[in-house]
Image (cartoon, rainbow, N blue to C red):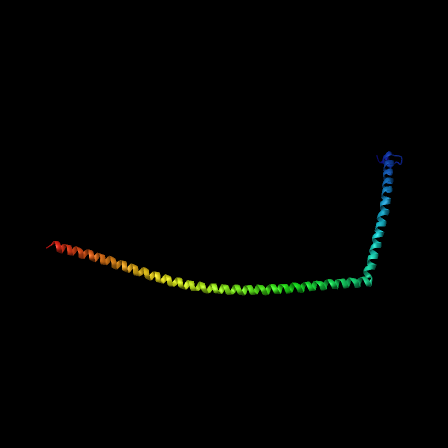
Length: 157
């Protein structure tokens, strides 16, 4: 088989050579186009570097950068002033709320004190009611006993 592939008159060899020639014909123009594209990119890159190194371009770039930084600084100062104003407003609101909470706390302590006094008064009233009830039951029992003795004395005569 090697002998067939090595022979210059072999049909495989001629087909191979035709394919090789066709590939070279197709690749050649592509190689030239890529080479032209690389050259153009190098030229554009060289021009860009020249423009960037130009002192006038650098000056305008610096001035533009300074203007941008100045506007950013002014914006930062404005935001700082707004934040300070908002903070002062918040502190004022918190002061008012603190006073309200202190007033509520004072009223709560007064209410607790009054509730404790009411609890003591109610306990005292309950004790007095229980004592009165006991005295009343004792008086009723005593009256029943005396009525019984009085009836016995009336009927024993």
